[in-house]
Length: 465
Image (cartoon, rainbow, N blue to C red):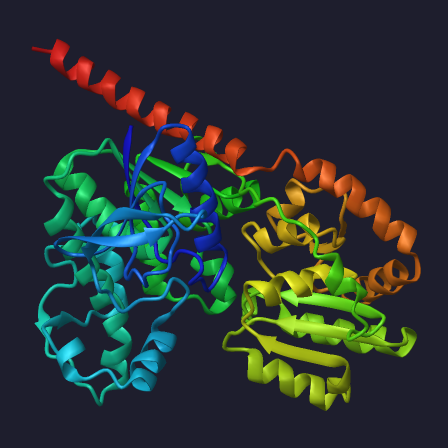
């Protein structure tokens, strides 16, 4: 079985859980014999991808990657140099363009600048990206912030066109697309080749932005989900959101829970007396969706009751300056550490020394970081508004907005180490069933269902003649 997979990031260069999930899922699928060609906007060069072809560009090339054993392996590379990030909205794209000092040669080619209602209607009407989805072209004015923001969709359109140019004549069985930026390319390629498309939802625009969601991104999501042969959601929580926000029939949506890599607790970290007695960890994007402001508020209610405590808010995002100021305003900043985005050894150390991992997400489609915390023997407090709470029963669960209850849970957990030990022992038993092999089995079942349905449809059409 040959699968063309479209994604937006891959470890070690990640900005969220999507890249981690893609790495785990593709490795497990490859072990089961699936031939994967994975496309991202840009290959950095240090990705470990011996299990699949890994691409980022238009036009065939060959790069050398390293396996886990540091052996050189050839991976096919194609250049698709889109200026994109999986979690950008229009405002963040414009800021990235400005801060990167991208010149007119990058974005001043003919691009579409639609009105919100126009693009929404075009998507609803089923127009296919890659030809002229945005109607009449307009010259991009580099001094016009509005046009810079529209450039986000220009980059998606350009990625779509390049995908069509590169893969329309390639041999593969199905297209597997991850989140909204890949959907236009996947739909266009599916229409061109007749291959079925699977739309994999790791996060919806409504999750990321709440009431202030981007209507154009939301419209592209709806277009992709309604055009897909099958939709995959990372949790039942996300499936319900898809049904509610995009009016997709539940029988078209399959749930495939994420897994986790096996981890080894680094005991040396805990033995070093460079940390305070109690460590409470938040790790994730510092954005509205993840609830970092609730974490600060909870900390202000815990600190008066617990001595020698440090709250670590690890991650980057648009709310970081705001929550840092919130901590200063509450006079608790001396109890906080803001290390920014962490990975590698620093990530291992934080998980290893933490007494509790807290995930106060406002809307969390899954929450891979919670599984990683458990794999490091760190008990968790989870928002009830999360997908991971479906699969981990032995965690403390609370509504994200109930900061009094969350503070009580933290105080009592820190006061009773035997409670934390019981939680982690039982949670690790649950974790043993949440491996990427199980996720791959579920995904393979979806692949086979889609391909069988296509074969039956082909036979039915042939029998009419």
